[in-house]
Image 1 (cartoon, helix red, strand yellow):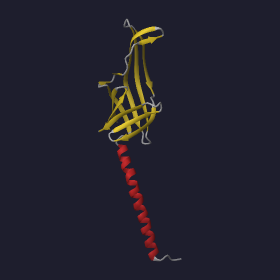
Image 2 (cartoon, helix red, strand yellow; image 1 turned 120 degrees about the horizontal axis):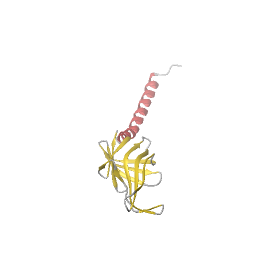
Image 3 (cartoon, helix red, strand yellow; image 1 turned 30 degrees about the horizontal axis):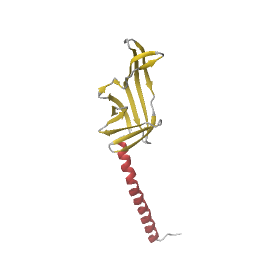
Image 4 (cartoon, helix red, strand yellow; image 1 turned 60 degrees about the vertical axis):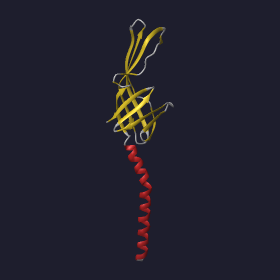
Length: 161
């Protein structure tokens, strides 16, 4: 059966119109992906609280196994923060922990890599919000390949690879 030329022209117009609507409808998604592409990636930690690594992230006084301790130090000497396109993230850190008695004797010294917490992230230029699976929330800013997260009152500055 031969289809009249007018029918072919109308079908062609309908297909072209549908493609145009699809293209216009996707333009917002595409723009959203361009925005997210500014953030997605792997970031290496460069400084904590303005100090190059080793960055001190906790000092306290307490007791361990009945022994009073004067200083509890956790120094970060490496961290990798990965923000995925699906809005998930992982945050691995290498930490050194030292504990001293009041007399200054070191009673504990350990280095460990913590695979780190995971969760989801959101982005509203220039703010990045990290929502950990534990319920903790950290916020920061991103621009020119530098991501600064405020965590426990300290600025953690990462550079994108």
